[in-house]
Length: 450
Image (cartoon, rainbow, N blue to C red; front, side, top):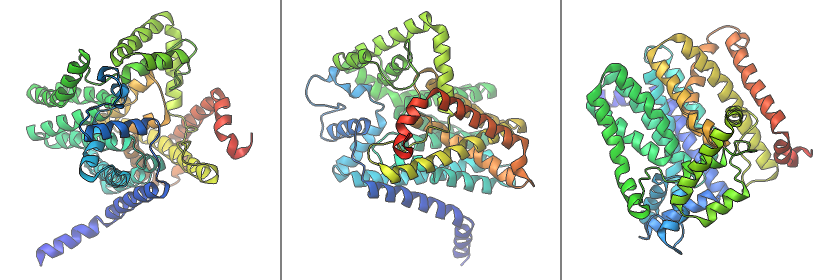
């Protein structure tokens, strides 16, 4: 009877969380099965690679031609492609099963954010409210529900980013070699799913340095590196070069930084032709060569492009929803929901980050360090709306922190911090609107006839 009572009490105390996770799972699943989005462009490439892996043909996009010339190595990966291949191997080539697994991963990520928030605000008497609201923000965020309905890397890599953040703060509070090992494993898998996650690793290493935990630091690095050994060895065997991250990252340095560019993912005709006519190893080296030449020849323009990327990264006028599978009123509704969600997340997230900074608490400082390091590689390469998804788990925690703390203060809307954050975010969006007016007209013209 005592066991039944404890189980019932536990369920009731987590009832709201269970409802949030269940609804976020169902929202993702319903969106997937309603639109049944056919893989295109990157998603089609991931699908092709996964099918080839599952059928025993290896990590390649096309069967024609030699492996060294195949474009698969220039795709983001390889973890997502192997994730898809595992599903195809067991269940056959079924998008429905992929949507099911990605809906589960999306809900699981929201749960991990809840757990991470409990750890981060362990000394705060409102920690459960903060954690539940953070899980809800992430679980019902329109962009993340939409992307979970596509064969794209984001849902999987965000799950591993959430695992990485959760195990870091769990280790922060409890310590121990087992947690270090798990942190190294999940960090390695997160980077293997999306290489820019590597920029979170210096924050973890700084913690080890600050605590002088050299043995634990070595264990963390050893496990993280071991995760890459099979992939790096395979690439060396195929291409004769050490390539732990493939060649996608290097190409982004080139297409995001050239004379007359705008910092977005809009390759020139020359770059597209080079991509189509050269091998991955050549693309890798040529990309960095052009980037270095540009950097030394036009340092001021590089700084300008970096500033533009920062502006666009945090812009509220760059919602998701402009995908091929929607049109008309349905697309307009989604774009509107995405825009509203981004306004809330960016304004409340910035306010929460500033409030966390003023608290001068170690765990919050590390949360802010993750927040600061996350977009650095994007600022130096190319910016797209979905490229900022990696910061969303961290921003949801900050946004929830401010929302719960602010709601307990009378007249919170008039708080200087909230007003200042709103002014900064809206002013940044206004600048982006002025600089990108032609693109805005092109995208929104079908809705408003201008």
